[in-house]
Length: 266
Image (cartoon, rainbow, N blue to C red; front, top):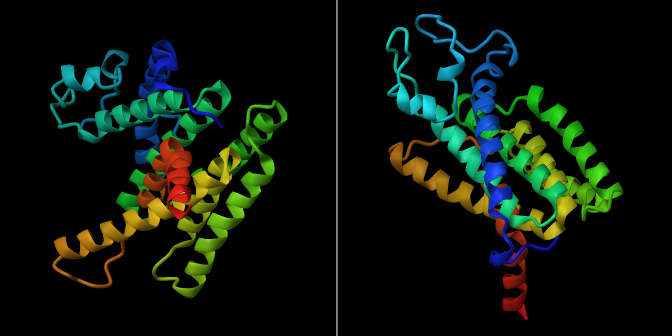
């Protein structure tokens, strides 16, 4: 999977991906709110949690509507969390990054969609300490199908490496979960397997970097949490966001990091 040199980056493609990222990011805010509550992500339309007023189309434009409304509901003035536009912007940035990082369109689309999914799962895990099967299980089917289609179409994806990545990353965390069930949940195991599946189809170096980055970020985050929490032990720390962070880092810099590491060994 070759990465384009800076001069070969297509600004139009990046702009299109970013625009789609804003739209998908807006949808992901609905997913984050409704999936943990086991509500439909399709109906009813979004509404103000305070006054119940339906969000009008003109007030549902990603980022812009939030700015024009001053971060408040048009009907009752209830404050609208800044997490909504931040989620939209983060998703747009990840989509744009995927467009720039992968020269082939199919892998770029797959990685962009996967990174958007990770945004939603990270927010849900951070809020509710759960990685919902309702999202993860269908994702295995969707991305497994994309990997299969990409491999069959000669898009640089590899089905065997995807299987190895799934088994290695997911299986590794499964061992940790069995040994220390209080320290690692099965939701983390499933998410690691999904990350291994998608990134493994690009190359096993992506999976290795994702695992290393997740463990490093999780360790640093755990230490910071303990310090900020006054050293209290037994505090549950969601690992999903760190898995997602490691996967995003690997998606953009996996081959470069692994090659630099091999050069150091040599």
